[in-house]
Image (tube, rainbow, N blue to C red):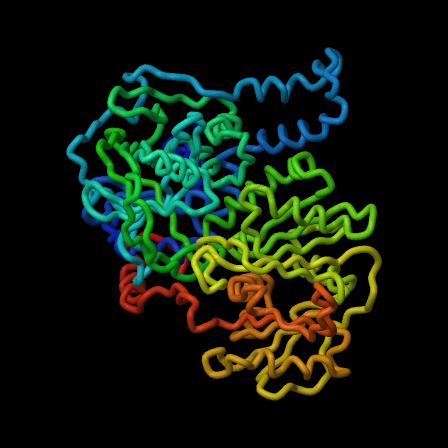
Length: 589
């Protein structure tokens, strides 16, 4: 579709989907605040021509609407995936007549792959810098409490030290000094697996950080692909042509020919430095922890290189639209990879890992649990915190409909399972320790067991300032702050066993009820603020080795004192951008 970043930018110009900003902008806080205001209003991509302290322009908000994601990739990949999955039943065993009928999409797959270009045909090699100075790059500081400037669209390439299998992932990069960065390798990512193996062997791991290149390269680095599908091959599939690479004598990795930048070096074994804090896509600061360090030896870049960046924070940001597209693209493959799973969706508003839902087959009692464990054992889905399952056909993207469907069928005595002492996404601090937490599985299967109320007509509860339904069967309770009343959930639980609440299977304690009334606010405020083992309450009976729950399930989704703070812009930056808004040439308020 597009072989490099600038082809995509040209397309955005033709479609009037990008604005050039002539005024000089500071990459420290100011640029990110402009970006956030534009994406909140579903505005265009932004090309900052003059960035303070750097010779390189910055482009952001490339994928800030579903339309721009579609412009980046085009319709062909989705059509190919759908046709391939629908053809599987009659392709095996393969017959010449069937293969001929399906030749169009099969031939498009045959175009996928890698090729090598000559050095003089690889724009990334136009400039080689052996005296590395990373502070020349226009790296953004997005939030006032960030630990420093962070590369926010880094494409990190590594190879397994034994097998040579490659991984391309997006792992945030904090600039420490002119030649060194942090590298935020999380426990469930391919680059982290490669580093683990290299460190076990006592070796430094050769690493390449790409910036720019085909838009498909950025999406592939984020995509939750099966381990057997290499990211560079997936990039080529999305592009509809072979991905061009070029060899360089001083580095073991071939470079992406059409990248804007390639930073080449090694990640040292057994060396850690503090990394963070950083305002992340959960909408909170991830805290300072020790992570490996990336030592950059050489920088290659185009003569007129463009620095791509993004800003993360509370939803919806660019990662929301990228994630929605990738799920739509890959969802037809889930029933192929996981037999019995008919549909699956994760929710960007929760940071993806905090909540997933699936439609599964239930041909015998509790078969759904087998599918639940299959889901929780698959790739990045292993870090799912809360999994909702049903066997009813519905649109999983419509969360209110899903929750109502499940609650109408939910039996607390048997349909809630909490798994203690499991791993958790590195960026999710609700488990109270880094990478530690718990999981919950909630089932809503078979025929409806109750009529769910939509209006609450009961009396108020002691200490509760407001009660409103989020949807049928689910009540929101605005409660005192956790710091003032840490035991409030346990104290209020007996009241939920009364007549007023018997038909409300789920109640949620929140800090801000009005924020939680719409779906985006509910998903973000609730699922990023509780850990199942700590924060789910119910009247509980122990029967031998089983926990049996009765009555309404209560989730305490209030902010806890040991959670990291919510990301908020500082007042000085808000005032600066207010004062300069006309200078940027932007029309939206």
